[in-house]
Length: 239
Length: 314
Image (tube, rainbow over all chains, first blue to last red; front, side, top):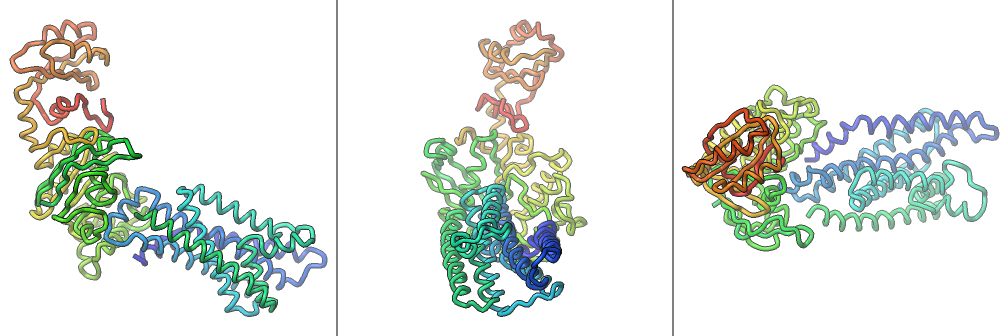
């Protein structure tokens, strides 16, 4: 069964191109634009900042793996066939989310390796940074499961996730610089789980551990909460 | 007894009756046809047997055990062919068969041997490593059936397995269903709204309408019910649906339907209504008149007042 789910997700060539190729192109473009600007930080630092932002953003878009898989298995005609098998259908839910997490995390790794190798960015506390990024992936995939279980249609789940990502990125000031004040500073660090992930990662990179712990803690709590709701909803969906 | 449904009632949304005191039995080794128009309750009955939905009243036993939807071991003995093609289009036929075989506990050499045997049965041995998205509709249907046969189920349930495919593929499927039926221990429940399919493969037939079994028996016995009746076909150039009611009003006519350009008229034996019919249909330009042998379709027509044509209920 695991081999089948693995093959199914690997066959999504278009998804891989979008979720790896597009951020690589965007990171490169943004680093080049940034290098032209006056008073720009050095390229390696800029690439690291831009790279982390795009990794987090595309972790959100990577949620498509989970909601598309769950939609196929439980909200289309396939559901009767799976539910008629002797296998506990919860295993199909876990397989979808599990492989979504795995592939999306591998994509995050590819992007991180890209900024390190191509732009020479340094990532202090790398194992802990990877752990936080992994947590971000888990949250994104669970959020995708929540959306499909509540909205029951892939297109609606896609719209909700896109709104969340775009809204979250704008609120956190990742797309456009926001006016410097207490509110925007707070939004930048704490407005959404996307901001928490970024805050935690940068806390680790800059050695501000209490902030890293705060961001990670918020992310852990959110992941546990969403996970618990997803578990309850999935029991309802599979029966 | 493989399946026994006793006075099963299923309501959707609290009131819409999908199964109405349904009684049905399937014995070991027999092919049972479940015939009815779209919306008659065939798929609901199947879901109840497999345990995919709970019924409101009545009892269902499968292999002698109560079907309550919780017993996963029962499912190991059932092969469900869904009405929609439910295979993964991007993965090869082999991977699809392997996946479903694994779900039912097959592995290793046994799995490999079963995949080869099923691929041969469904005529896909030479296309096994191609993705179904490149298959014709008929080939996808065959793969869809194959996925339900890997674990050699004792009960195979086929929910309209030939919908939307060409006659050649349909014949192929019917032929291998007949092959399956020869395996003494396998019982098959075959639902369709194609009467000729059910007539061709079934040992016994249940006719279902509005969630209720309105007749059952062997095809022969059901047709014998009609043997006393005469079925006359009058073909015209300009048929009119309203004429059906006018014809029905003629004394001694039991049932009338309009199929294409032809009125099918069922009468009591020894009664001649031909003159009256010809007079009534003269303005529609009669092109042919014939007497027909009763078949399962006539039985259905007599029992329900409807005909079945490609999913449409006249």
